[in-house]
Image (tube, rainbow, N blue to C red; front, side):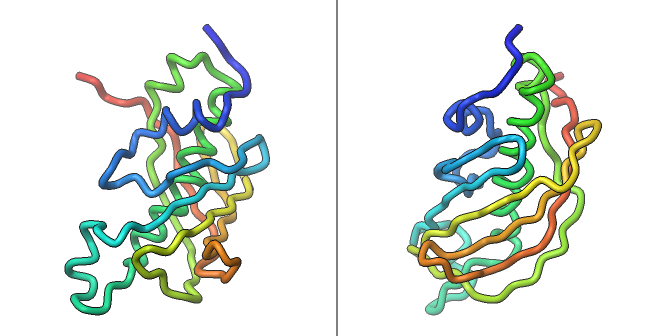
Length: 156
């Protein structure tokens, strides 16, 4: 039963969200203090058809999900792997519990975003992170805090 640091690729392979609801293409960095992830919003994403026809904008709730997939899910997997065997990490899913986010910019189809997350709290599978979402050119899009907790997956 292996415990200890895992690579960004291993963390990414354990993220349960998949297309069309995965908004994390690459983990650029991850350690005990935080994580940095990247995602490119493809022009054919399912939500652009209705948000808004002829003038597509990435919905704020999707931007929050993007921030959470790096700042809670991926970071939570990494932190859990430091404490528990891989088998138990694989049987745990991180659920979102709260967010306090301020938006500064919109994201259009085709744009790449970077999520920078810094751990605020990690205790008893509860994680709270400061998150910054910016465009690849550095322009800030949104910032704030997100929180979640790891719970056992129900495979019955």
